[in-house]
Length: 239
Image (cartoon, rainbow, N blue to C red; front, side, top):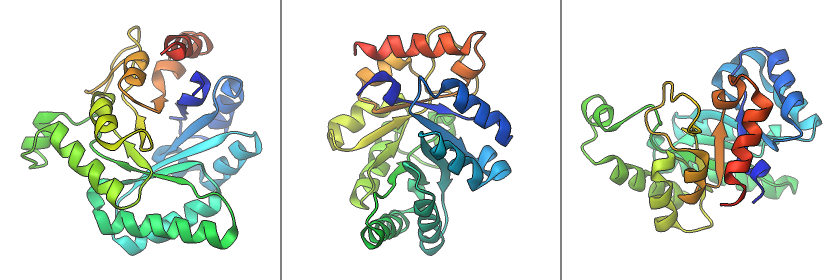
């Protein structure tokens, strides 16, 4: 996969105009943009539609986590938006994920369209082993819990998972090449780690098996964002 197609640039802003300005600035270097809870809450579906009009893909990162019927209906609404990919929390359980996946398949067949890729969030990259054990009450090791949740997602019919780059190699080995791995927690060696605890460089994440790299502040907060993005693309070009 070309470097520009691996990178998902996070639109971590709260205003519609700021998001569109970022898309216009980077659309020559990036194929897909991430819309998260902050931007979608502030700007709504309009920003998705405008990005599509510019010929770019959207990863809608809303991490749905609710009862199966509610998530299924949310999945249908997302399918109608025509995004390339969106996610749910694997901790919502197998029934929740399976029902959402089936809703997408039914919608695609009924309307003769491509369905969005559906991926499951395993453990957030802001959570480390101590938080997992002491706050969330999960006694398994991080890698074991991620493997369990990824297996649950695959069994439910999801296309892949969102996982720390540290877990990518294990997931790729266990679930094969057809299972998508989307990794946040990407930090070039020259960028600050900030609030994420489990991070890797872009090059190492691809070497470990990641398909897509979600990158935000390492680019958008850089002194020269265009040059920062080019450095990242160059870093993974020969992996």
